[in-house]
Image 1 (cartoon, rainbow, N blue to C red):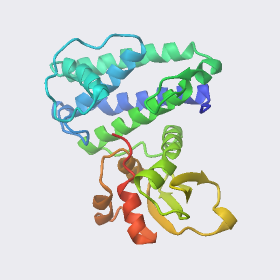
Image 2: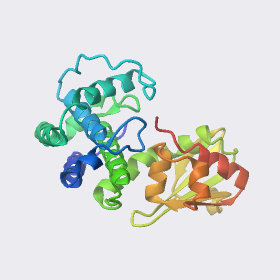
Image 3: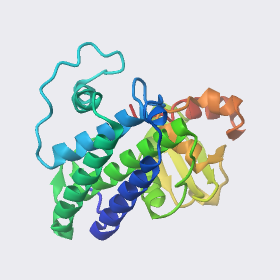
Image 4: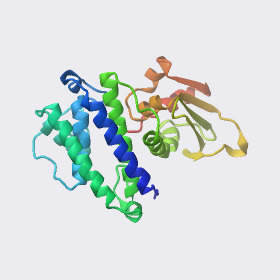
Length: 275
C-alpha cells in the first residue's frame, strides 16, 4: 500500500486542472476538434473524458446512451469512458470547458474535506487495490497525460516540469520494474539504467532477477549498468503511455541505447504498459 501526502496530491490536482483550463481557454473551434494521440478522441473528447471520471468520483451515474461498436474501445472501462465522451460530442467547446471548471471545483471541495487518514484508506484504483492517495496520484498522471495529448494536437508544448510532473514521474516509477522485466523481458542479472533528461531529469535503476525488476538506489556492488536507455522525461511518458512506439522513438532520435542493444530494444518496446 502506497502512502501519498494528501496536501501534495490535492495541490497537484488543483495545479493540473488549472493548467488544463488555461490551455483550453484560448483554443479555436478547429483546435477543439483536432485529433489527438488517443485513438478516436479529439481535443474536446480528452476534456470530456476527464470530466466523466471526476463526475463518477462525485457519485454521478454514467449517461445511458448507446455508443455502438467503437473500434478504439477494448474493455468495459473503455466503454464507460466513451459514454461520457459521446454524450458531450454535440456540445459546444465553451459548454464543455464550463462544465470542466464546475466539476473540478466540486472535486477540489470534496478533496479539501478529506484527511490524511482518508488518503491512507484502502481504495479501488486502476492499478488494483491500494490507497485513495495512490488513486489521486494516478488521477494526476492521467490528467497530465491528457493535457499533453491536447498540447501535442494543437502545437502548444509546455508544463514539462514542476510539482505536477514530479508526482507524475513518481507514479510512472512505480511501474518501471514491471515494464523492464515483465514486458521488456530484460535478461536475468541485467542492470538497467533509465536516464531521463531535460527539466524533469532523474535516473531509475532496475535490478533484474528471476524475471522480476526491482527499482534500486544503486546496483549490487555498485556495479555499472549492463543496459542504458536515455531519453527526455516527456518522451518517456509518451512511451509508457502508449503514445509513441519504441522503434519510432528510436528512429526519430528521441532515445539512445547502450550496452546489450538487443535486450535494450526489447525493453524499449515494452515500456508502453498503459492501455
